[in-house]
Image 1: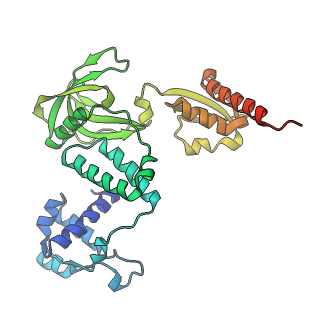
Image 2: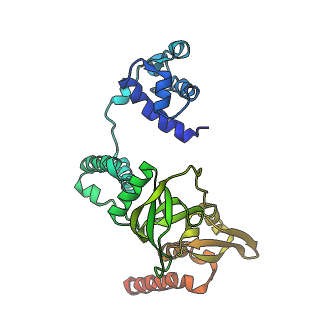
Length: 321
């Protein structure tokens, strides 16, 4: 099985490969891309309808499908426009810089060097002033820890972590078969199979003090499970907050991930996990009088103080009659 996202990623790499390898062998190309010849044939049938706007025969990528099906040879043409330099707006460049900085937090080795090279080029395009306006920060570990984990994942090797517990009061040394690194909610995580627990576990990189090699390789454990409640579920800073809101504020239940939504006489009671007090303060100030109640009450203290400060400042600045 192949998802549409995987297929698009494969197609983006397939075109330049076929341009660099004219008259490529179908079976060999399929092996290089980690798919079956039948899957690759389906990809080629999609590429057949890709091209410039207009959709006329001269606008589309040309593939000799008869040669593919009868001889197993791939001949692609009329795709030279894909090699033209791309033109980005400053907003697109800024978005790419932010995305690459996130990718850099979970890559090492040659891939990390490639990301650094791309970042340098994009920063040059954006200019020093625009590049410096891009802010990005995540909670991660020292680069040496990240590099060792990335290398272990690439090599399929198990590692022993020195890992600080939730309160940093306890340090454990689990043996883990690392699967991947990911960025969620401002934190970098390692997803891996814990041999000690015989189950999938998630480890925050900013709590990994060291990484040492362990005996044995990485077994095929399948894919790690998805966290249905979202990544805030595994963050100790997350707190459950209940908001009673007016009818017209119901939109927050559709816009933000929530735990539950219950109709009440005054409007709606919404439960959600909050990991950033500043975010909650901003939300409460935005909703204003549409917030009828907050539980626990102290969760609204910061918003009340900010509102009082703003009102006091407004009173000072308001013109005297």
